Length: 216
Image 1 (cartoon, rainbow, N blue to C red):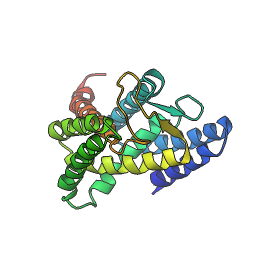
Image 2: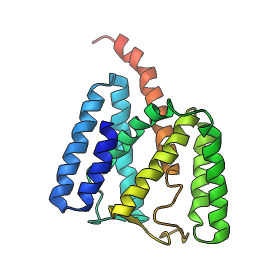
Image 3: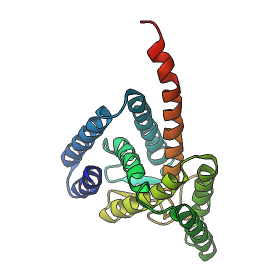
């Protein structure tokens, strides 16, 4: 509940304030991030710190580098990288409460929508996104989590773009693919992000016993 409130209200505050308000939102998000990570085990904490750094690099690349989408002040707000991690932490909690049917229903709807968007001509980008999602879905171990995150990411994208926190380009630079604001399947990026986090966590946990047993 804390994660959901901070993300939803934080975006609303950021959309109606200046850079000072954005700084305040960032401070709140980073504080919640720190509190939740402090409650985690050391291996998970290290994995989530790496995930935060990965999220920052991805944001710089896709927003400032490729220019797929722009934030209000043409920056990457400081609350965005930890916000990605908070959304990831929310995912497993919701996934456990959802029926297993979601692991079949979500991919089926995603594929159908991507093909429909392509044929209708309003978004070619969705086909690329659904392909990325299916790669993660086929190679990852947490399919129910990926399906849940696709839906969660869609809700957050709809909220953020409706408020005006960020805006996707109608035609993506360098790719020349038409898309909507937001792309309905933008959560495919979260599936890849989740797969990275889970694999990083497994690597960190695998090394943890050896590190603990090493002489000081």
